[in-house]
Image (cartoon, rainbow, N blue to C red; front, side):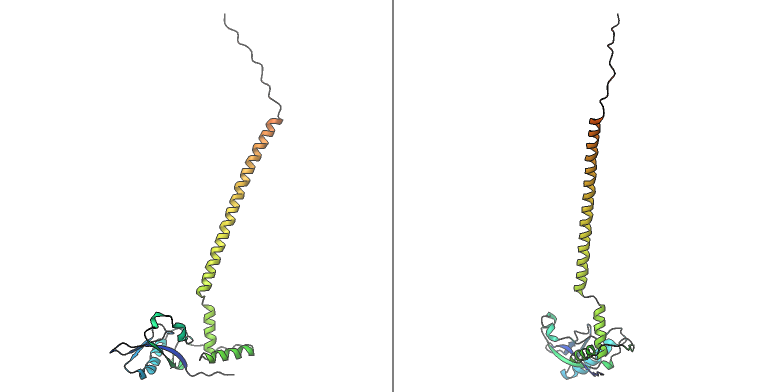
Amino acid sequence: MALEVQVMLFPLYVHKDAESAYSASFPDFPGCFTAADELNDLPRLAQEAVELYFEGEDILIPPPSDPEDMGQDDRYRDGYWMLVEIDPSHLRPARSVRLNISLPETLLHSIDATAKARHLSRSAFLAFAAAKELTPSPNSRSRNEGASMTTSKKDASLAGKALKRSKTAKAQKSVAGSDLAQAKRKSDPPVKKPPTRAKSKAR
């Protein structure tokens, strides 16, 4: 089943000060800005800005964000949101390579349904999923760092125990040697000293 999606709806943040033009930016495309004197011109200029943003760049087109997820961001408190249509067929990111893959039918239906709900093509959805899987998240890095720290602590603990055992073994060996020496002294026959002769005084 082929899935054809012509446009993608992206949130555009719009801000306007008194006696100024409408300025707009895409949170999904960092550094992508546009401006217009008339509000009705923003959708067209937004498409042009996104096309320039992707021209010749080796980056993937991200899935659209939900403006509600950015409601607590101070950068977006003084303006409002617009959903603008972006035609991905006009974007020219890195060259795509055609790929033939086999997937279970039930999985393919789930992919198509989710991609359609997010205004994505099947290929774009699979590309995003692969990119997300290949990019470590902060949480996973924290878990790896935590595991490394835990391993280091375990190694240090084991080393300390080994050193303690070594010191204990040396102490036990020293005590055992001392006991053996004492036992040997007790078992050896007493050494008889030769009789001493009294020195005669000179006359």
